[in-house]
Image 1: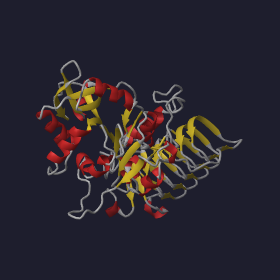
Image 2: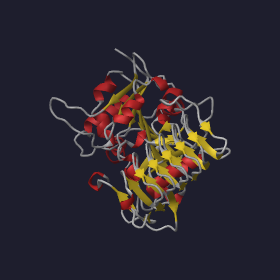
Image 3: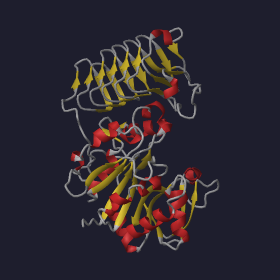
Image 4: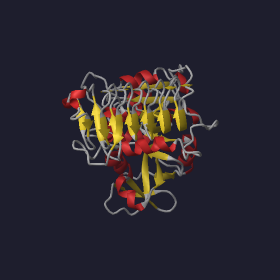
Length: 425
């Protein structure tokens, strides 16, 4: 029988609905980040950098681009005869056919996969966070405490603690209580959604709680283990970690990459972030262009002015165009003379000549103000913006729009222009 000390189970099936149209056609872990990467590259790179060479990736929502990106795992050195990376979608069984209904339910449905490696420990990860972590150090902590479960935690400002699952410890790291998004938190130690389980504990708890609707680690598995005398410990992490779950946090995390000394450094030799790079031609920056404080992806062509922005692979920015404080994802075209300010523009978008994106005073979004805010103009992938139109702030556009869609040539701040609205969250 194959024997692995620790395998990883990477939860990558989430919709990421708070990213709005950015995740309309793609799972959140497959959303582009930093002009070159996709969000899932970070936990996958952490695995191989930490010596974890067996990773099950659990997919569900819009998995096509995620599956093709991961492939057989070559960029992360996970193309192996024993172990490596395996895509684990829901599948039809002889007795039933179920979608994954919760984080722990997804793991439960793949008990046979985990059993095939007879692991001592199982590392549970989320596929939608930006961070670097050595899981081997966390495993050493788990062993030293003879823990049944170790939960990675980080201190957060007390005023933000009510947004997280909060751990209360005895001073030696052992978790005595935990509260899920408490109104009045008693601690600021927040769960990062990263767990190491001793295999026996994980298997026993999943089987015992299998019938719980929407089986979830925070709501079901951890309380069960605590109530049955298991040893739960908090592993405190003090590095950079960001949940890019909203448009605002996604934009901020990208902008932080272009600081002179970024808090999250993509360029460290000793902890590389690997990705499936399908663009290999170099960038081209014309003699008439200006580029200041930017990340430029491979194969982009710059003929205009770009500042304080993250530009993806294969992007073309036309002559006389101006792009500021924006994220432009791969294969997007910004037409000549267009102006783009504080925008998030997804993949394969066309911005017409002379269009102006991100102007005027802010106003609440008329469609989904809880998603489309932060002063951003958000444009979903494969959208088309006509020539010479004006688009305000806190706006969203999705689909192939035409001049007639813009009243007096404008989508004012707070506006929403979404084609095929029944298909969009």
